[in-house]
Length: 232
Image (cartoon, rainbow, N blue to C red; front, side, top):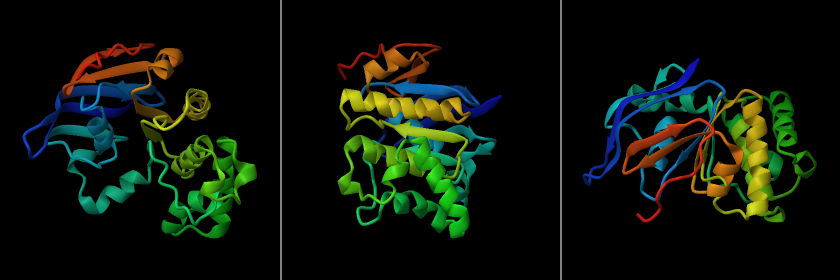
């Protein structure tokens, strides 16, 4: 079953730079897909279009049956309720505990505490941090902070988890642990799309790999490897 469809998509910025050129892509429900490419290749633009941080200049971006390209700004929040996003920078609120950071989004949706608590504890258990729910971000390691971010992203049980360089600030061993968490979330049925520069992760995990270069899809392979030329 198709979950993401990108049809004849272009993204041209106001300065004339073409970030995405005539991209066509399908991702099935439950897939785990790496998007790879050198700096400024267009991979981050592609990721941002999925959660409507960027709008395509032309073409369709369909996520879970919603044409994101035509979605009104006032309706974007409804899309993002169905999507979890994990960034390279942790973006945790320093004065809130782990529990409060994960609960924050649910509170903004107007959920009651009796609805929020089991969701937060379930998400924290999934990422292996249930025992640290009272800790503050500055009491955690970098890997633990990223686990909190993942818990925050999955607390509302999204159908799609988007990861934009989630291991970029982490050492290799910690990166492996984070990828185990993300892989387990995918195995539970969540579609995962991840942009990364990390060759070791891509080559080790043997998932579908889409390579972008100068805004153009240059390869798309199941159980692929990282083969993008990095000189640019």
